[in-house]
Amino acid sequence: MRPGTRRWLAPTLAAIVAALVCSTASASERWLYVKIDSPDPEAGLELSLPFGLVRGLIASVDREPLRGGKIHLGDTEVNGVELRAILRSLAALDDGEFLRIREHDGSARVAREGHYLVAEVDDASERVRVRVPMAVVAALASGAAADGTLDVAAALDALATHRGDLVQVDDGGESVRVWIAEPDGEN
Image 1: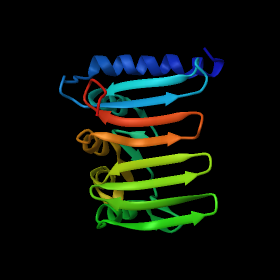
Image 2: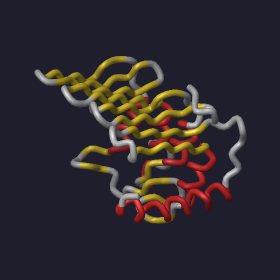
Image 3: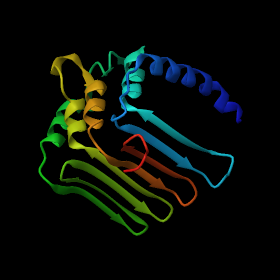
């Protein structure tokens, strides 16, 4: 085991065990899966968590900026732009592509496609695909506008109803996949 891994592994496992004790995941509940593959046969990660456990983990965090299932941003204005207003606007969009960048060695795009906010990046060494359900975007921005929070718990609840890929990254060596599926991991 790599030395850096030891620092975070024990606290992470303790938090997972504590959340397992507190969570009541049902057999029909969807799970969050993360898989990181590496060319090194001794490296990689496979993580499988029921959404009840994920909710329990988020609820157990009581350290700024995450408290009570919400990220407390204080002033949600960044360089004169109010983050929650952007999220609400994104949730209200109709289908369409609203950003496309083309360069000689790659491209990027952001669009709304059906019930998803989609971001794609392709270049000579990397391919990235991100699909975020619009219900998750809307849930993040839910709640009182004046309290300066993003509602992570509400976003997780919205995400738990989704099924399929959220993130796929392939850089020619390592690959990352994040998806939601039934307990058997198939989607």
